[in-house]
Amino acid sequence: AQTVTQSQPEMSVQEAETVTLSCTYDTSESNYYLFWYKQPPSRQMILVIRQEAYKQQNATENRFSVNFQKAAKSFSLKISDSQLGDTAMYFCAFNAGGTSYGKLTFGQGTILTVHP
Amino acid sequence: DAGITQSPRHKVTETGTPVTLRCHQTENHRYMYWYRQDPGHGLRLIHYSYGVKDTDKGEVSDGYSVSRSKTEDFLLTLESATSSQTSVYFCAIAPTGFDEQFFGPGTRLTVL
Image (cartoon, rainbow over all chains, first blue to last red; front, side):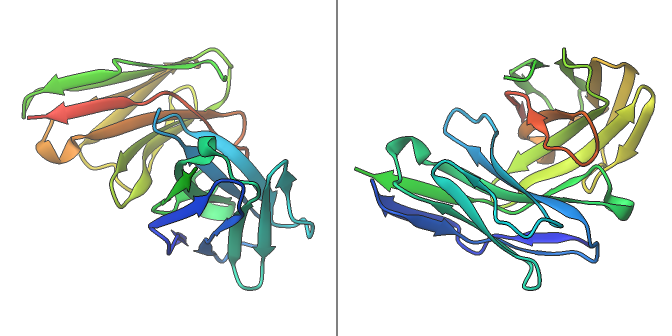
């Protein structure tokens, strides 16, 4: 079975500081996609960033970047210059091929609170 | 925002009654999904569809059925609702099975 683990149920950070959210996963597939989704209090699921497993370069989107360690099956999200609007639940997810083609597997989520 | 709507947005029902949730898209995406979200579990896949009349089970499909007779609509049915099905239900769509998924606004279902 493919699994995603987010070991930090809750995190907090001061505005303008940097925070890193952890995610590990387990799969036997060699090609897959990894995602971080954000869910603010509005409940809407919003894609933050995606990473394709065959790409060596870590993905970046403005203040958001990932540290993708394929051998360690680790996919952490770094948020730089944190803003109050970053307060949300963050979900790590991955989409593998093979028999799981088309299915996203989610972690349990990390609640991030940004303090002024 | 991707054109995805869910109806109803909120529903309260009683144990044993049938419930149908509707997901409607205007993006003409091939893949459609139903998830449930519960505290401590993240989002879990109930059923998904990879084309009209083509559906498959997810990890928590017991007690749920789906139908897709048109590209734009994906229905989730609880034949006889139970309190354990109280949850927030999300629909999602994607152009292919490997793409990011776009989510609807969610439906909060309470089964008394």
